[in-house]
Image (cartoon, rainbow, N blue to C red; front, side):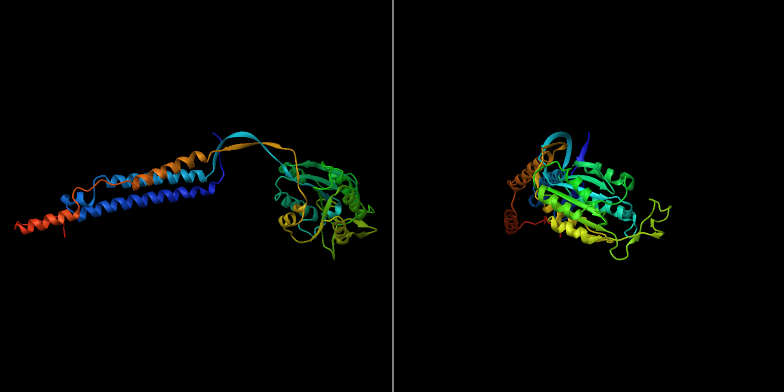
Length: 364
């Protein structure tokens, strides 16, 4: 049987229940031994009525069984799967990733492209219900992942992209944003966001004008993440493994810097936000919840998922019944003692007054 535990960390509670049973049993036995040492057989029935020990053991077992069942309920044990419909609600997020050769610069460890991939994964990990897509670009564009809610498939494709994913080198950011905006499923003027990861280099594709047009016509908000050193920059490897040296122009090595001005202007004109990651590590959870998640959500089509059937009530209900049974047993009237202590005392006084010899029943 395929069994799933929703809260396996609560398993330690069963150890607490077992320890409680051991302590209770020890206390019952110790009380019995103390009574046997304190009184002779003639007075034991006065001090410890018949059935008292059995009642204590029954109470202990009922509480232990009840607590054990409630602990199992807290484990959230599930088995058996069933299909159910779940309404989907979220936003459509298209990630636009620069895979031009300048993204291989190593001013951001291990390089700008690898850092961008990790930042995208960190953001996707914070999502629940949003649709995500991926478009890569350099001199031309390619939609690598259409909008989807299958995050693991998205991440696998993300790992495989690079400069080899596009046929033309260079960097045309404006063309990339235009192609990404055409990839949205919803045609309403909201619920859509572009998240661009790039070093900001562009080759006359008018990215600021294109971004403003996309926002005005399609309601797309654009969030930009700038990668790379803004002051000194870094050299551009000629190949992925750097065996070919560095890119040169007119006999001089080419240095690539972060162009944050363009990215900041794009974000400002489209009601988005600019995140100057530079060479630092950025907490993308804060970026998502602080900016991207504020985009108005929409209702998607209902999805059918195959989930485990909840069974906690199978343990919770019997546990509560046993607990109520223990309360009833412990509060019901106990059998009357044969001779109350006051009667025994009166009898002893009467016997003493008649002149008979008294034999103490209590051991000193």
